[in-house]
Image (tube, rainbow, N blue to C red; front, side, top):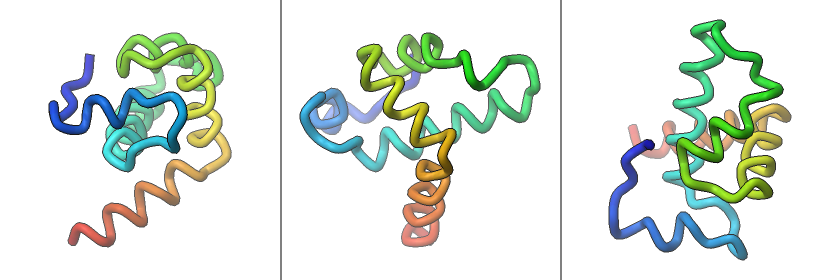
Amino acid sequence: MTTIYPNTQKEIKSNDRPFHPLLKMQAYNWLETLRESGEVNMFFIRRDLQDEFDLTKARASELLGLYHDGSLEEDYNAIYKTKR
């Protein structure tokens, strides 16, 4: 399971809020690493995403949808550019 900073754990786990930027960043990095490896079918990765980040099925599906439609990459790029 991916390590998440303790002070953000509760906010990240919230099912009634938008995804925390830290979770988006970590999930994007994790998904990109898997995609680049070529070892998995990215359309069937939801269960692994759910297990890796301890998400509900619905939240993992929502996050994966953001990855597939490019929104997660846009958010990652926006976060990364502001951190430089």
